[in-house]
Amino acid sequence: MTARPAPPAEPGPRAVPEPAPPADDARVPPHARPVRTFLPRRTALGPTRRAALATLWPERGFAVEDPTRPPPLRPDGALDTERLFGRVAPLVVEIGSGMGEAVRAMAAADPDRDYLAVEAHVPGVATLLGALAAGGPRNVRVALGDALVLLARWVPEGSLAAIHAFFPDPWPKARHHKRRLVRGERLTLLASRLAPGGVLHAATDWAPYAEEMLAEVAAEPLLDNSAGGFTPRPAHRPVTRFEEKARAAGRPVFDVVAVRRP
Image 1 (cartoon, rainbow, N blue to C red):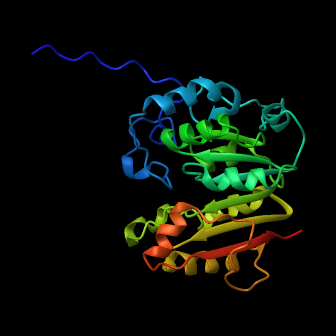
Image 2 (cartoon, rainbow, N blue to C red; image 1 turned 180 degrees about the vertical axis):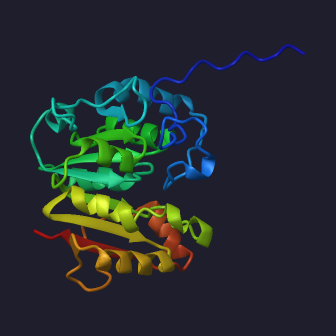
């Protein structure tokens, strides 16, 4: 039997690599490596997604951890949002945009602000770019990679209008709770990047994680949850297909909204 030839390399970004060791010593054991809030995975792309990457990735996308496609940076090393978006406007970062359903709707309804969708998986990036190419809002850019690395490396403290984290992985097993996004030092990082009055908006359909989010926000001195608990879903947060499935399965959705203190 004749072996089938390998498919051509897909255009656009590479999959997110495993986290690097925290030190130069290659002997650092795996358990000492940085903890991801997601698991990198590879998925084959169909022709439509490959075409979207080839068309819009050079214009509207960049990679967090691939030096062949870095973002535009200012002389001080911060993300140059003026070059990235072609204007100066308040910036909203969405962490874990998935297929981009929420960020597209919110950006279209909010044209005076810019939206940076950060997604760790190439299929989601490709799907979002395809939707943008088909007439989606112009105020959206896409970053492939770890949002926490992006925030720590390129986003100055006190600079963001909002951070959205809709339905982050709840990591339900107790031994995986350390991977949760809205927790401890990760939450402090998110809060520190918000401008005074900037909004952190998280949503989840996993009740134990929702309760933990409330407790973590209450313990974070940079944030104020004026509602004192969960917030009814704001009208500006669209109901996505993921949320519809959660509701159909009988899982309520919880919104946690907090504001950066002055």
